[in-house]
Image (tube, rainbow, N blue to C red):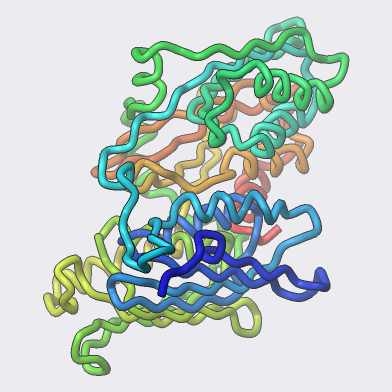
Amino acid sequence: MGILYDDVVIIRQSEKESDLSVITVNCPDKTGLGCDLCRIILFFGLSIVRGDFSTDGKWCYIVFWVAGNSSTRWGLLKKRLLGVCPSCSSASGIPYYRDELLQPPRPPDVFLLKLCCHDRRGLLHNVTEVLCELELTIRKVKVSTTPDGRVMDLFFVTDTRELLHTNKRKEETYGQLKSVIGDGMISCDIEMVGPEITACSLESSSLPTTITEDMLHWEVPPGSLTSISVSVTMDNSLSPGHTLVQIACQDHKGLLYDIMRTLKDYNIKISYGRFSIKQRRNCEIDLFIVQADGKKIVDPSKQGALCSRLEMELLRPLRVAVVSRGPDIELLVANPVELSGNGRPLVFHDITLALKMLSTGIFSAEIRRCMIGDREYEVYRVLLDEGEGLSVPRSKIQERVWNMLMGWD
C-alpha cells in the first residue's frame, strides 16, 4: 500500500506556545537524509528537543519534537522538508528516486544584489534578516563603508524558490529591503551574473597563511558554557549487525545537525536512533549505525577517527576569534562545509545580530569559502568599526558571538 505525497511530511502544531510541535517524516531512505532535514529545521529557527529515527535501509520513519514560536512558517517548512525527501509512487507503493536525485544537481543561478544606503548601527543585520526571510542564501558578501557614511553592500545570493530572475520576485525583495531601510536606501539593483562570476562566487579560495594556521588552533571562548565534556563511545556487543554510538554532551543550537553532517560526510547510515534533552540541557543520543557496505564498524582506527571527529564537532562546531589586523580589530568565524557543499544556515545572521546587540559597528565584511587543512570552511571576516574607540572588550565580543551561534544567548 502506498503513501500519499502529502503524508510524507506531517506537522502537528502545538496548541500552546509552551508545548512542542511534532514533525513526522515517512519516506524512502537515503544516506544523509537526517542531515538535510535537520539543516532545514535549523534554518527555520526551530530547536529539536527530541528525535526518533528508524529505517530498514529502504524506508525510513523519523519523528522530531521541536520548540518553535508563533512566527514559524509551518506551510513553507513542510514544503522545504518535502523537497529533500525521495519520492515514492502512491499508486504502487514502490519507492523510487526522482531523476534529478540520480544526476548531479545543476548549479544554482547566482545573483548580485547591489545595495547602497546611508549607514547606521545594526543595518547589516536588518538587511541579512530580510534576505533570510526571503529565502535568499548568501553565498558571498562584500560590505564596505565610505568616508561620507555611505555603505555599499554586494551580496552574491541564490534563491531557494528559483524565482529571482522574475520582476515580481525582484520587486518583492526591493520592497522588503525598503521597508527596513526606509529613506536611508539610495539604490538597490539585482542582476544575474554570468557563469564565470558564478564559478568564482561558489569556489573555494585561499586565505593568508597566518589566518589559516591560527584557525586550526582557535580555542573555545573562555567565558562560554563549555565546562561540560563531550563523551562519545562505540559498542559492537549489543547488536549483531550494528555499531552502537552513544553520545552525552551539552545541548547547543544545531546539535543534531552537527552529528548528522558528520555521519553524512563519513557515509554512515543510521538504522535506529534516539535523541533527547535531559535536565540542565544535557543531551543523550543513541545511534545504531552501519557503514556504506551495510556492515558494522569493527576497525579500531575507523572507530577512533569517527569518535574523535564527533567530539571535535560537538565541542567546536564553529570557530570564533577576535584578532588584531595592524591597527584594526577583525572578527573571524569559520563554519565547516559539508562534502555536499552545504553549510550551517544563519551564521551571518547570528554574527550580525550579536554585534548589533553589543552596539558594535561593522566597517566591512566578507564571506569566502576556503580550504583549511583538508577541509572546506565558510569564513566570515568582519572588520569592526571602532569609531571613537572600541568600548566593548574583545573577549566580550568573542563570547557574545560564540554564545549567539551556539544558542546560549
